[in-house]
Image (cartoon, rainbow, N blue to C red; front, top):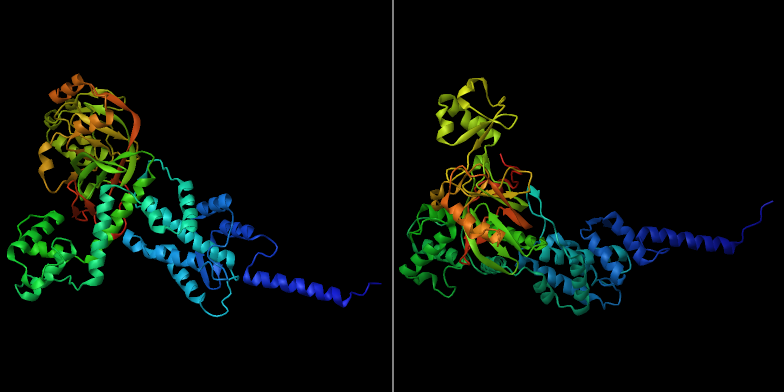
Amino acid sequence: MFKKISPKLFAVIGILAAVIIIDLIVKRPFFGTAKERVYELLHHGRVSVKTDSVDINSRDFLKKYYDVFGYTKNWTDSSGTNDKYRDMLIDMLKHADSLGLDRKDYHQDYISRFDSLSHLPKFDYAQYESENELIFADAALTFLYHVAYGKEINIGYNGVKYNIDSARIVTMFDSLLIKHNWRGILDSLEPKTTQYVILKSQLNRMQSFMQDSAWTDSITATNTPAVKQALVMKLKAYGLMPDSVNNDSVSASLLRTAIKGFQRMMGTDTTGVANDKTLAYLNFPLKKRIEQIKESLNYWRWTGRLKEHDFILVNIPAARLQIVSSDSTKDIGMRVIVGKLATRTPSFTAYITKVISYPYWTVPFSIATKEMLPKIRRDTGYLDNNSLQVINGKGEEVDPHKINWNKYSEKYFPYTLRQGTGCDNSLGVLKFDLNSPYSIYLHDTNRKDLFSNKNRFMSHGCVRVEKPMVLAEFLLREGLDTSTIAQLNKCMAEQKPNEFKLKKHFPVLIFYMTADVDEKGTLKFYGDVYGVEENTTETKKAI
């Protein structure tokens, strides 16, 4: 009834079955092209090679690269002709340290292990070819992306628009494979801001010192030759004393000058004496200082994502604002007052949408009920003395003397407190509105004297600026005419608020960097005022 199957047919079926089984075992694309296999792996976003499982981080870049340039074997080739590509990649990734990046983010362990195994006799390049090609290409593309645009940063809200040029990264990757000029490509991708250049230089000098020199993080106040030598070595680590100076024969004046430089770097009194406070700064682990610089370098790389050429950067630990251009620093910089520990200024990005002259200050509910209400209960004159108006739910001003203030509390308070305009207003005469989910903005202040304080962490979360008029003129350009400026300088009372809308929204980045470069181009370290680095995570909204 059934025809007998010939032995030859059995043999063919057996061969096909064996091929399919082998294909499944080694995961080679037998029935599909290598490109199809690569796209299949990209879809999953994670590749497995024997006991290794590797995440593919730059899936979009890889897909775009293969769409534009096609699939070729760049990293795996049994002839050994492609060894130069792996050697180049390994050399390039070694350079990550000098940029403040971590080689482990670019599959370093897997690539090193593959490279070592590839030199063994009878190493099978064909096994897991597509997986290995993806892992190597992903390492290179992710590295190029991080050099140009930084890694993700820890902020509570990101309200700015990105301008990440994926074509630029993909083209640079293709150029890397063709020309092998990885140093030139990295140089073209890196930021050119003064701050970034100086931070990177300081990082490399400090890392080189740690590799080549002996130092200690426990210098005492004892006046002995050994302690003096340790002190000199630590000052050399910060670049405050020439490397050529003999540690045993440093003059007292040179040592004093170097200590003053260190004290300026740490923002403490420049006595030139290694007192207890200075020793505490000196004994702060050098390795942690390097980590602080690396973190700041990444913030500066991240700014390359902005669509705009210019931006405002507020550094919370420095209590400082600066206007930055992508290729240089503007001459505009100023001190600011930021949130105290209990009412922190959050890290976030947003746009300034408008400038308001003679703004009202609408007192936040928490301040009105927790801080002001107890004072009003004791004396309603507190409202008049502070130019505070009481507004009901209909938006009408009411007579505070006709209100029984004892009826209200933090749980029930049906009024809004609003401060009248003028120089006595807590917002001063200028307010810079931000489009963020926080009730946080930049503004003038009626307490100009506070900007001379070293400790400028005393606001309820908003950022008070030292030179509001200078900032307004920069933002509005021709928007503030001579008569308006004169009116603002007169600081008249009971003026109606006036809005000046920006033609183009201006980005504001409020970052938390404990290492940065000041207006003189000097490396500075700032205190971890909110304990962000200590606790590793930052409070993501203002209290």
